[in-house]
Image (cartoon, rainbow, N blue to C red; front, side, top):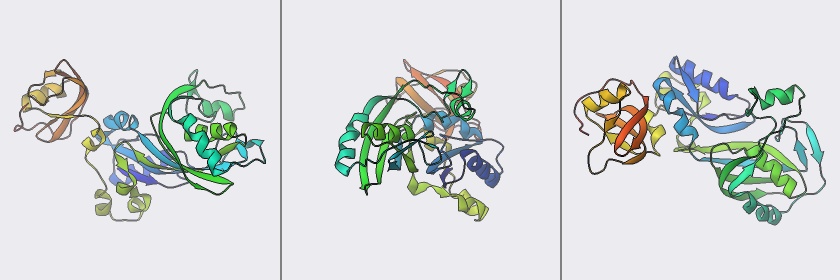
Length: 295
């Protein structure tokens, strides 16, 4: 389920809404969205929760608004001001600063983040008044572009990898420009293969019919679009489901890297291919294994 989370809703609440709509026993989301943020929140149900790590590793896209002149302790509009400035950047200055944040960079996460420090979440320590010192981490930002600017605020689009904090980007931009800044609005527009075009509004789950909600469910393997598929026979499928590696044959079989195996169109396992052998790391029970397709 690709949910379009609205502002004010926590990711935990979003998962609960989806679980209730489909009477699911197990569910999990692929990447937290803060209550301030809206947009794409992939939520996996049942066996599909095993694919969450693959979705979280995918590229992400955001559209966010930076409010200039104020830096907050949370780096967003919910925080307390900690620094202010009367300076405001023009569009050219913002655009000139963006290249410094594109590529492989080091980024210090926000103090109010889910990063763990000696087993404790940074945001819990910060709320208790402790001084939180987070070290810079490598992140990948592929694209930054200004789409609107009115003097007080700038709307920016970003495409980035796992672990990138948009709030930290706004904070660091403000410091570089000498005017401070924080995220005033944030929307996630893409996660891995999933975009806004296929997202389900929360109202479709809370106000619509169960049949209408079902139309938004997507097959489990759509979460694995970034890795190759291998069709295997029933015998090989059963071996994979028991956690046993199998030899892949055929001209198109991958020889290295991650791959997922299907049997008669049903997902059975995800793993790593090493020297032509598929070693399963996640196995799925989505309807057994039927004969018909060969390795």
